[in-house]
Length: 288
Ligand code: PAF
Image (cartoon, rainbow, N blue to C red; front, side, top):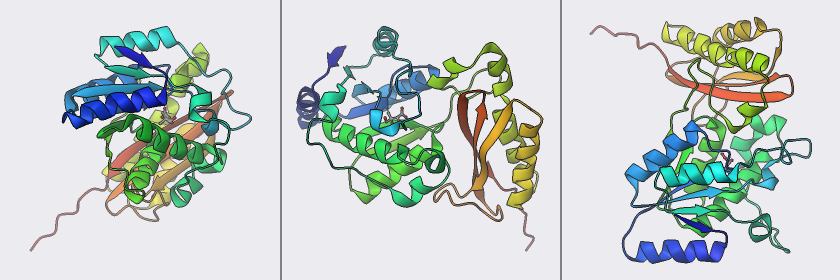
């Protein structure tokens, strides 16, 4: 496996392969790789001839009070996972290479970034949209894989690629969960053993909402109340948001007629957890 740090070297490598008709797959990450990343890398390995994983803790997507300084950076462990999974290039650009002196262009996706994560983290999605655009420019992939765990991010990336004609096929893969249902996340290491035990409540709340929809509830307020009740049963947890939304626009739905995404963010001590679940309304049989 090659480790490349220079954007120019990264582009030269990819362009060389593209000219030969080799398909280039890409999994962008901030490192601290876990089983969720491993599943994305494996899927990319199956779908593409050559595979790049980037490891870059992007400073512009962290707010001033957020965890940029303490974000885990276990680089040897991350490279070992990439080697095990047959990654061809681990792209590890420096912050100076990504944001050199004079850098000033940013990319925004205003409507999708406004709500939910965007409310708690006002600059987060501009940071994500900008770095993803830059990484696509450097890696020149045919296809890039993202996890459903960051649902709003995956919708934003799809919008970005369509709006700016970036020509990258976006694949979103299901969230990988711990045995009890907690969504895997690099930030789970911040949970104390007691918090870790309690953290599954967010998943249970989403399950309660999805079950209500599955069994015929169409009123989004009632679905949301079912989710809220579960979180209220865990006194250590506070709700940042719980929402029943359209999976494409991420706008809140008044009624669930077809598909919905249940979005949730909670705080547990100093840790903020996010998760989501897709749900489909019960189909009513129409007799001729
Ligand atoms: O999901 C992530 O790890 C990051 O937001 C991404 C897409 C690598 C951009 O920094």
